[in-house]
Image (cartoon, rainbow, N blue to C red; front, side, top):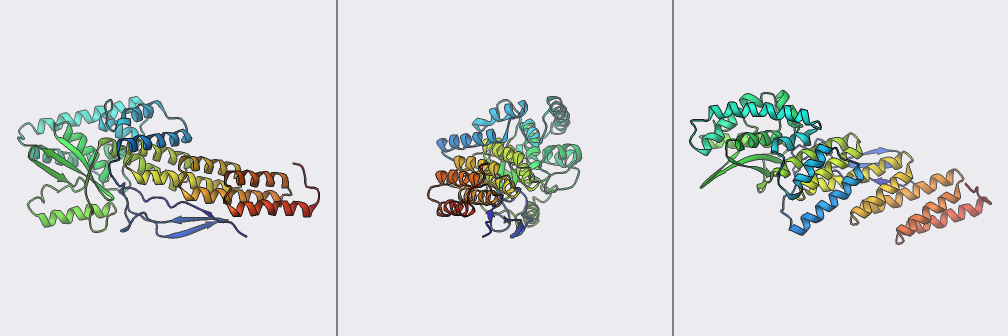
Length: 397
């Protein structure tokens, strides 16, 4: 009987469309399902603010995952420590987003911040005569597209370095940069998330203004609501929401915006089978944004699919160890349990084919102890004994 491992369904990229359709890729005995996350082929974290105790639990959960993924560099250690309470005290949003984008050297971070300070000084000179918050927001927005976002919209351009160096952007990087600019003018700017999309909101006493940051002529269309709505829909489709963003909008804190960068990196890394790095990226996303259920799901999927890949390569001990860690991390994740059984079945069969019955018995015996309610394991344990007796004296290795 061929045993099939079940690969986890990974969440689609936050703020990106699902380019992969439902299907299966069969490699040896591994079945990998590639499915979109939500109806309408889009994804996004479901921001339902957790109770305080839930937030602590999620961060503890992410801390365990970070330990599995390996050590952090000092720059990221500082970032995650600062953002643990859901706010930045030591890092401006720009610096935090650059670190999440991959900047690791303090001198490189300082160069980006210095360049941005020069841009802010230029913008301040231009807004001296602006009286209202809305007027300042409009000038900051036009400056953003005239001086920074000079390249093309690119679906995968969450990395702020791409925007600052080459002008390429998506809704996440554009919204973060607008927030960085406008807040330096004294405006109250907040990230705004709809399913699969991010934009910005400017709030002032007695009013507010929602801004589609990827639409360079957003303010010029303000007098034409129908055309502005079409522009919003077009930008939304670019960010994977067919027909424009839908569902309720949620204001999200700066730490959550940075967490989305990590989440998007995690999806890319998992697609490249860089499992340790994908695990770390999703753990950082959960740490910074406990409400990001998509990042948590992808973290579990990374552990599972890493184990599947190892088992497919015959590295059964390593695969079983990962699945044990996964079950300890999230006991309710059923794929860990079923794949743990399948790994041991395949492991023991491989040992039997080599005439190594003692290891086969040990492997299945250990699995039975871990999973005493699994009938297939108990039957397989007896099957090894029967094969052993039929062959006579087994090797002792």
